[in-house]
Length: 269
Length: 262
Image (spheres, rainbow over the protein chains, first blue to last red):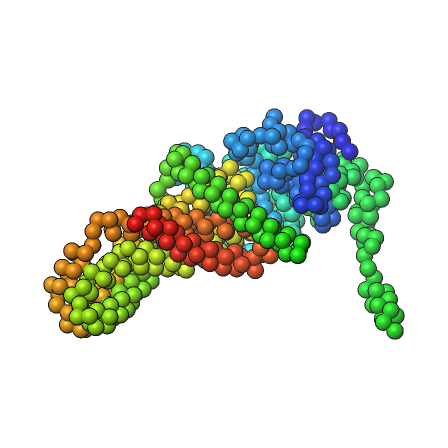
């Protein structure tokens, strides 16, 4: 399905098909991600949302389709063009993906060292500004192994925004965090949107986070985009899968353990 | 029968695919090495890891192998009354064959395995993806410094191994068994030609590149192998594979280089 939005889209995805071997993971996804807003891509496990994110980031080549981002098609772009696009984006991975041999500050400074000719003093000031934004100023010298789950995610976020990207991506930002740390991270995402005016894309299935941060929601199920719209539109959706998901209804086909055991026992008699 | 043939075909295709990937990684690394910006620090850091931190192992193994060679050569040469040839026997064996091969095998065991494990873990914890997303080429940032460091470190370690092994032979022959010092030293100087040194040098450079490239490729492309979906267990699989494949490659290419430069 194709959605429409009043804002010009930052990312335009058309007829995206992705296979892993013989398995069809994405089956013709069409989605417009509005600029300057927080778009949440939600769906159950195996819905294809992380694969969609990997395609947008240029980490996975789709079988067919197009992903237009900042005026370039990621699918047909050369490696040089993709690298130029990536300089305009920041990514906070699910597990943080911090480099374990570097301190928090060194992790955050890496993109600046690689892509700019700023002197070390300026780089250190910029690092402290970003660390302050994520409330981690005192963790500058710590190693990733010394950080808690929430601190790791915040450090990864500081690294993702160090180049002031136009697009910011989060993969399961609140996964594995306790409710209050997850809420802190949600507030941080909202603060970033307000302060840095970025287009933010969040892949998650945490219901509470979704309705707290989202301006726009895309719901995926079994490799297809089944609904897209504002949180109110999604809540009002009559789509059965969307409603099942919102009401936390178990999926059909899930085996009742007692019944299954009884059937097996009867069969052996 | 059909299943058996299918399995052989699948395995052959797998080997060809892996060889192709490793070769293309070499080409990409060579290409990146020629592209600015040129950064010395990551290479120096890898030379420290592959070279300096292998030094104790190389000193110990070089000394031990030199002493064993001295002992065995002395026993054999004594039967023919030719103990004067002890120096040349030890020097030629070490410079032409044992030095480059043993050093490369030691580097595989100490540094190669940890290179594979490091890159494999970086791959499964999305650190390689994170580099890509920061527009930093992981080939250039992670692999190229390791391969360059291998090309520099292994020949240096080999020369240290050669020197220590010859001293080990000297200790057994001259100090323990009383072979004349002059005959040991002159035997070495007379027997060793520039061609022997060149052969050892060429072998050590090729082994250095080969070992680091195979170990890097195994870890870097872990996600494309069958072990890719097995997490920590997969890392142990690719690390074992890397050590076995590197060791076999060193031994086989030792024969090839020896035959070609004979």
